[in-house]
Image 1: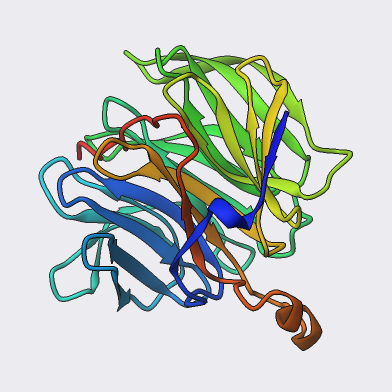
Image 2: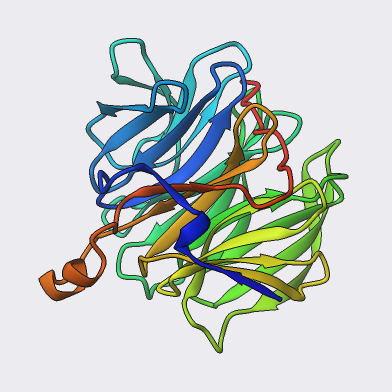
Amino acid sequence: MLTATLGSIDVAVHNQAILGEAPIWDQQTQRLIWVDIIGKSIHFYDPATEEDRAVMVGPPVGSVAPRRSGGLVAATSEGISLLTPNGSLDPLVRMAFDTRRSRMNDGKCDALGRYWTGTMALDHVTPDSSLYKVDPELRVTTMLTGVVVSNGLGWSPDNSKLYYNDTIARYVEAFNFDLADGTIWNRRHLIDFSEGPGVPDGMAVDAEGCLWIAAWGGWCIRRYQPDGALDRIIELPVAKVTSCCFGGKDLSELYVTTSRHELAESDLARQPLAGSLFRFEPGVQGLPTGHFAG
């Protein structure tokens, strides 16, 4: 098992996010798109110019996805919305959940353009959150219930498995997945985070089928083999590591979002880079970002 440190990791965007999350790489524009949930903004990072442009959108945004027809959709407190050119959100799909108790959290699109997105309990305790699937015709199907914090998603390179982070339960789950009809079955625990450090937050899957898991509270990203065996730990100088995705022209870079939300002044003094966007070359390529077909 290899452990790396900050020496090989770049800071792409310095200390901009309160709760940086849900990064995706848009192949069409060659930009990284990520959100600041608490900051209620969507960020567009251009590695060619090193410019990070933030668009304030009003409600918290749990995740975003590029559309095949162009533009961007976002998972917000109102459901799935279209980001308009002027930065406002135009609702497409209303989601039936209690916004006083829950908010949208992580989400991604599968290879056929369905948007999978979940909710999380604001108290981090109540198991009444769900995972939803939104198909291109904007039909919503509830795929899982009884979750406290629905989190990171990913698919195996052959699309035969769906991976899912159940944060509060501290498990990375695996399901059999049928790409043609978007069904999942045979849920099982793939990785147990109960011994820590940290809990599973966002994830990315590489071209070799390995899972890169952000460890919230764990100061690291961990790489796991498809059978759940720990392969590598990438240490970071911040505790609240939130998510990751592959990007760059050949998908050979890993971008990592982080958070400074609810850190005390003493913690921030120890973690001056908390809330930054990091980037490094992990030595393996990733899989392309799924685009919403709706």
